[in-house]
Amino acid sequence: DVNMAIFYEANPAYALPDPASVADKIRAIPFKLSFASFLDETATLCDLVLPTPLGLEKLDDIESPQGCGKVFYALARPLAEAPGQCRHGADVILELAAALDMGLPASYEAVLRKKAQDMSLSWISLSRGQSFERPAQELDAANFALTTVEKLLFSSVRVSRSASATGRLAALAPLCCH
Image 1: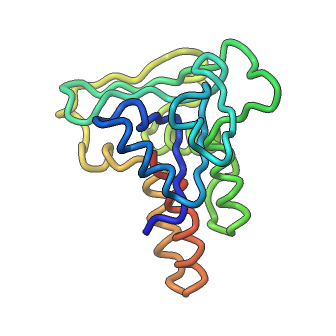
Image 2: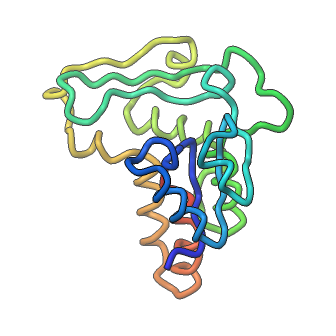
């Protein structure tokens, strides 16, 4: 049984086949949280909706999909300030991770900086609009595919196998999936 679900900028009650059945499954979950920019079909079914900035209101990264012939990476920088108390969902998740003493970075910007560092890219250059592009065969595809966030999560699992660490990870794991 699923006791909690977190939807991160996703609308399965609209996008998946048989929306009525999906909505029924979502309704059956005792606690539902949605990070959403709009009050969409899924968000209306949730117990708590946390507003997220639109794409032009937040710092994010852009990368080519796995398996492309070229690897592309760049930053999408905010062009406008997010209204009210909108916050990037990743920042909220990382705050929860900090409260659970997971040892993850304090902000999504810190994650993106670490990711740039892991790829030997200049944060300053990326911040100024430069992009990274190379033919895929020039890179270690297996290492490039493992994102910084995944590396950080996996390393936090290896740090401690105690029951409390497992409990902390179990509490955070649903937050990391979208």
